Image 1: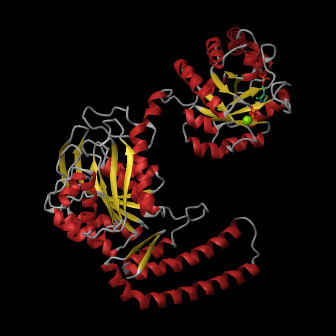
Image 2 (image 1 turned 135 degrees about the vertical axis):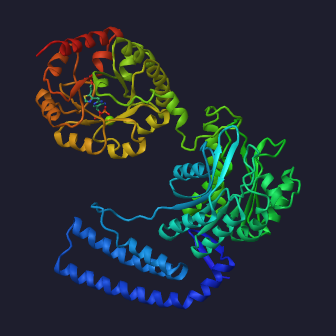
Image 3 (image 1 turned 30 degrees about the vertical axis):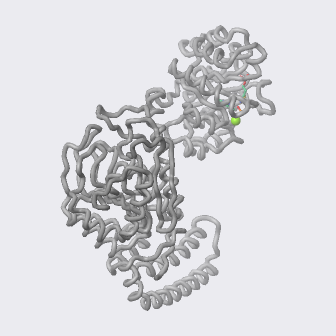
Length: 604
Ligand SMILES: Cc1ncc(COP(=O)(O)OP(=O)(O)O)c(N)n1
Ligand SMILES: Cc1ncsc1CCOP(=O)(O)O
Ligand SMILES: [Mg+2]
């Protein structure tokens, strides 16, 4: 039997693939020879072309390497297409290399891809919607073939509308003939005809792995596939599957109704189901009565693995089965082998359940959980209020050395600054241990949230992420703003220190929200910091496409002169010692606030 390598996961081919393999062997060798010949001659053409037109760094050089890459890619495509797919598909995929340029030169990268063939859940906890979210969370592209549309919520399934099998076939063809699908995952397959169409299309367009979640009954107890489906599952689909993931009820149904009540029963069930043809079986014991942990039994035909996870106390479990199977598919698509894929999937579900155990969506007994680990954070944050440039008006930057000198606690000074009129707070901790900084930041965030004032973290993107702060402030030697933006996402506030128009331009390109410009005046708070003066501030403010806050040596004595430069992009002042190197932080902040208010309320 021929071995196929599934991105590190090697499995014996199924019978239909093997037969096709033999027939195509001769053609494949010929194609390989022709492909190599083509590539070699094209490479010579490019090399002779480049000796006449020397490669320069920049777009031309880039196009040259792209052309080489694309020539070898075509060769690869020619191979796989003519061996395993229809001529029409070959033609359509070959055409991908002739796609018109979108005007942007970019490198070509294959993205791991799962196709889910399942039902839509209007409540979006399970089905297609869960699959999309799970794959997205694991960084895998997910395409969808919808087999049924359900009217469903946290109470149960109110209605089911089947998609005709011809149209399921059409969707399958659309996706499989065009996109490079790595793994197919199945969920709700409501009729024998749909299963037959799927099996036929999988033979026509083979993929690296097939993950079957044999959905029959919803968690609310509603029937999603007729019992007549069992024979076609056993005879057609399971023999093609790389893994099948039944829960106790489904395992029992697949085995003709045997009772499954103990972990030992699960072992026997896994073995019996594996004998039906799937390469691996995962029997899920989430419903096992009297079990402290969530126990699943994995069997690969030779070895058993008992996988345990702590049982999370939550009602938000709707969609766990779909999610688990999708996560397995996603990990396989990334190149994982089977057991590690199952372990990652199980851990993902456990963490997601734990994360979303307190969220409330719907009135029913079984709510959805949060695949993207975002919802409970959004509930806690500043009610979706993103950055406002006016927040820069009186920008308080903390300093633990000054707090120590005056015997102040950080939470007390943050509270005092806000009560004195600070409009945004930055925690600037240069010496704290990470654990201490994390704890302090959490406490300050709670304080700031209670006042509706944004809290930014200086330098430490990790701490900002960990506590879900409103954003970060980073300098020219910190994490690049472009990377911080990717890590923090589109909503968080990012400020960048800039001394020149060029830096300001780059900050804008990198996705920053504001710039901190300075040091304007000499200061002892930050060592070795070049002073740019009011002229330097003006130059940057005039050039900046982003709002600006001035920093460095600013206090009640000179804040007026700073704000009076009168350039619209300048929105406020950022201050450390004038607020925190004081016995009474509230009084100091109030005084500075009133100076700033004078400037804005006095006509030029
Ligand atoms: C508002 C604001 N502007 C500038 C700075 C300085 O940041 P950076 O240049 O990274 O220097 P450190 O503060 O990290 O020493 C700032 N913190 N805040
Ligand atoms: C962090 C920083 N960045 C430029 S100057 C400076 C220190 C500002 O402190 P102070 O307000 O005490 O002069
Ligand atoms: Mg910094």
